[in-house]
Image (cartoon, rainbow over all chains, first blue to last red; front, side):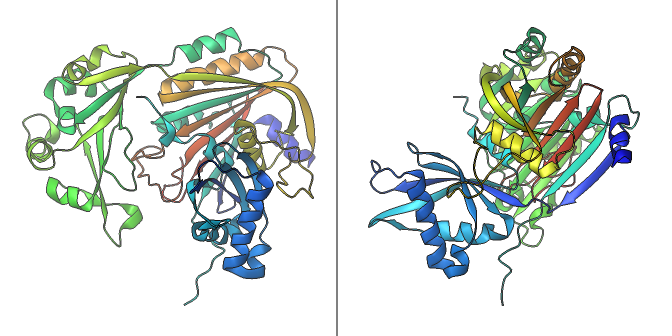
Length: 129
Length: 349
């Protein structure tokens, strides 16, 4: 360990390429409801997504761990974090969630990335007009 | 046939450590090679307000122009080629075009013109190109890359005439276009601007003060945890969660300390590598002054819809189109550099 520290201090050039090493994937999603005035709390939203996972993938799906990192109640926009191995299951169940409390709904997936940093710099948001 | 639901498209993260004083360090080359930058964000620990020398560098970032409905053949105009393209350092990128569905255009500072076209447009244009690397089986997208400084592409040459006629009379490609030039700014672009509907834009700066921020050991933290923490700070996501929380279990990587305050600064627009290089030099000077914390972090995001990312390597979107790097600089001139790309990208330099 001491040897390593010394190397770091001296600034010897080191390069490593990590392929598919990201433990998590991050998603920026927005819930669109038929009745645009209705609102969900963060807990309700997470519970709703869990229901979707259970409906599509059963108990295995319901056991997928994901985090609701940030949620804006006004725009119904959320940042989700999921283990990379659960991304496809989470994404597919979001796609197929079509009804919330007897009203039509849909999830719009704005951005998906293995890096949370990438979600803070989306060039498609650049508005110049 | 069963499909593996747990696999995800390939991602790459290149991690480098070295010192600015080490001969092998290539930071300035790497910065220069990511041409089309959308956003720069800085994290300054134990800092209340933006130091004046950094503010003046950020304020002096080159302005850029938005041209509405630019006919792409205008980029082949003889005057424009002579006054701007042949002199080098012109940066141009189509605006509000999506590389996974639209035709995209980029003009590189070395005089190369890149067109990423769907199959129909490519066939209508009738110019030599290659199938995109990322869907070579279906051949639904094609990339044309021509060196405008080449003798064959000089005005009047055969290749030039063919491309000009294709763009003028067959494909008639028009797009909103972002344009910038280093260091001349508008003067050398006048020949083009005078014929178009354009507006000038300044890079937009914003600042956010943070207090009582948990901070990992930035020297030794593993790369993915470090980038996650920086992302959480930038996205204003709280890291103060317990491991049993229902909503989120995101936590600051251990071992951690608490910063009493920090400043997060970001700039958006079409940002030039030369300006970012100046900012890095200024940050190194800033680190030489005595402070409580001896590091700063700089993150640069590339345009997700640019036809090229690092160098002249083809870039695609797939599910995120991310191409960015994070440079963590320390007081003793050492640095940690992380370069990340998504699935449709070559390995960063």
